[in-house]
Image 1 (cartoon, rainbow, N blue to C red):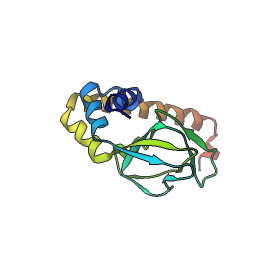
Image 2: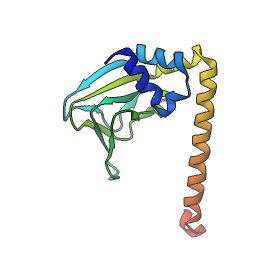
Image 3: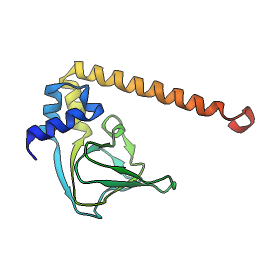
Length: 152
């Protein structure tokens, strides 16, 4: 895939869209392309996560041991958004359903982009703040479904 195609794809990923042109260009230029065959495992549940992955072509299935419904990731999906910011563990196993191409974006690269482009870092900070507000509101709504005796 050409660099311009990678830039265009990354610019459509919600987290990266707010970065702007030059930061996205640096991510695209510095990311690592990985090819997977059907059945290949990209990462396993419980592994340390030091990067995010953007699906370029193909699809992956995400499954975890908690028995939650499998999810599918297709072109443009970002896997491991939180891993770009903080140390965390993979919450699921990602397996290629078909031949796939992904872009690996290491946390160190993402942090470099944020340090070199402070305005972009501020936009990302605001995006995460809004996501946290929405998540907190969702949790509060769910919490109200349970009575005080159910919250133990």
